[in-house]
Image (cartoon, rainbow, N blue to C red; front, side, top):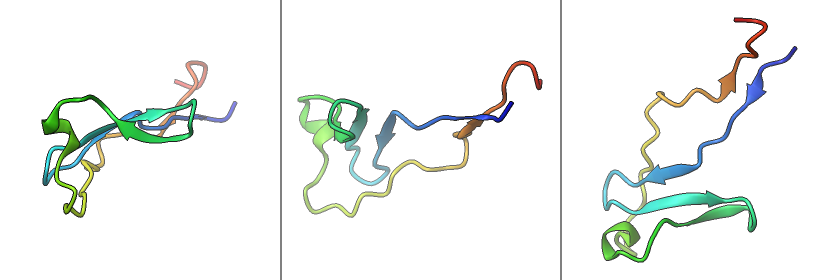
Length: 64
């Protein structure tokens, strides 16, 4: 069987601390909460915490 493709569900800006979660119902990223800290700066060019630790492909248990 082919590996299963996974998608990230949360991301945080390394510059301003804005936190977003993926909303399946609208098909886009949404703010994670009402706290001012997670909103971040409106002038920030967001640098999302993409560091290579997220593995998008998950092997089926039969292949492992």
